[in-house]
Length: 71
Image (cartoon, rainbow, N blue to C red; front, side):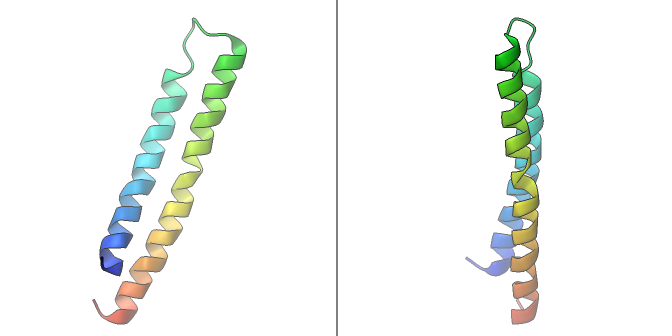
C-alpha cells in the first residue's frame, strides 16, 4: 500500500470519526435515560471525536512522505 493510499485512508477515518462522534452523542442522549447514561454517551462521543486530529496528523505525515518519494 502506498503512502498516498494510506494518507487517503486516514483522512477518511478522521472524517468518519467526526461523524461517529456526532451520531454517538446524538443517539445516547435520549429522554428515557438516566443522567448517568446520558453523561456516559456524551463522554464516549467526545472520546471518539478526539481520534480525528490524530488521524489527520498521520494522514498529513503520510502525504508528506508520498510527496518526498515522488509518488
